[in-house]
Length: 256
DNA sequence: ATGGTTGCTTAGCAA
Image (cartoon, rainbow, N blue to C red; front, side, top):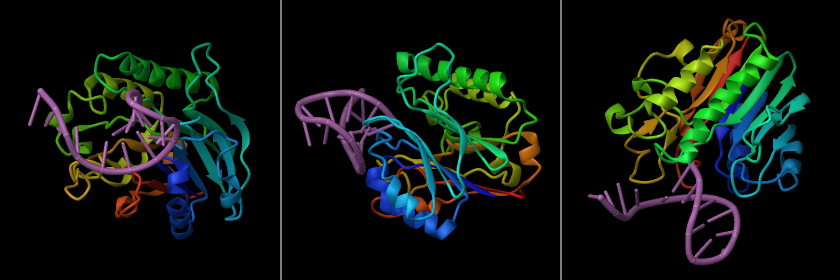
């Protein structure tokens, strides 16, 4: 099984690029984030014509996530159902074959000390509690998406400069590591140990050509799935050229 | 210290 995740930064702006990328890489499952459309406005027919089913947790203007899969998804869930606010479409879970796929767009947090940063930290804690309620670390489960957190210094081009920002603040890293401590492994780090592997580069200041990036998009898997993970890569080629998303896709393969 | 870019929506917000 080939599984990918990609923050596409608007599916309407990126549709042709996403379709071309899928044609080249043929993922069995592609989780996408920041689709910025409602379910009704998602261009599902274009992906159906391409051989993919689409399930959407949509929202107008902001946020929104979807799972595209070659075989039909089952048991689709769009909410934490934990009694807290669910106004923002950031969570989608579905079963594809033997694997439970969870697609997330973690809040960015905007600025340290802001309400949005508190919301981000709380949201990641809610995600961990969702996993605790519905799954065990023995499940075949993949948690994919834009986590808006670079886990370690080697995941940031200039860790000192980014330490006071929402993407690499100690508190953001701490909730991310608490999430992983439930029983998740970082697929890219199963296969690659070097620094300089990034999945996001700011549109500004020539960040991409200078490789001033951060690794904030992840495919996290439970131990039984990690044992079957044969490769995991970031496709930085997808970030190149005019009309690219500011994120690159992450792709992992599993012997399933 | 500020601004730099992109997308959505239509001047300003979010990232």
